[in-house]
Image (cartoon, rainbow, N blue to C red):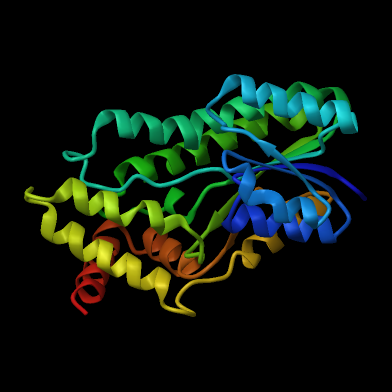
Length: 278
């Protein structure tokens, strides 16, 4: 079945890879992102590109209206836009923390609220939200990022129950370590914020370990492991409520769930010390 799919955060990484895969599978794909110039390849592949900041109400409304004018329906919303603010709670400005929630939670909610009346009228639809293994685990200096992903997990669960009577599925994707631009906006600001503070040494070690992980070939999974899950969820008559894939996701979530906080704490801290000291 050919679906009309809207993907946020489609200018790179998981969003772009998913757009390419779904276009190849015959779906009508609209990629949305702030950097519309980065989505020319999506248009060349047969998709559509829309300039949209999920925190901008007018851009969100305009994007949804354009799709309805051109296609008359929206079958799938893949909420993929997001980023990470890292740094000790004491050193991250509250305005930066608010922006983290504005993009990762409230921006996602805005586009979802805009699409839901359409799906209710259709009596069908799928909302697929990119959470993270970080929605189930935690890492040092990631308080604000993890807070948004933990919030998204609960928000999505509640939404799933609300929409069940309308034949609208809500699916959570929980990626592990994926080779994307994710770390590019993570480690430099974290190091800068920590300079001259008691957190500088650990922040520098964490930044070094993160940077090496993202730069070393083979350390992380390709974005295609997530695009495959999105495709699977779209094809499924009754999709799972959660899909997990990507480097470290399953083992880290297992340790957190079954071995407890103290063991998980020691694993995380020893890993950072080991990797950051290389």
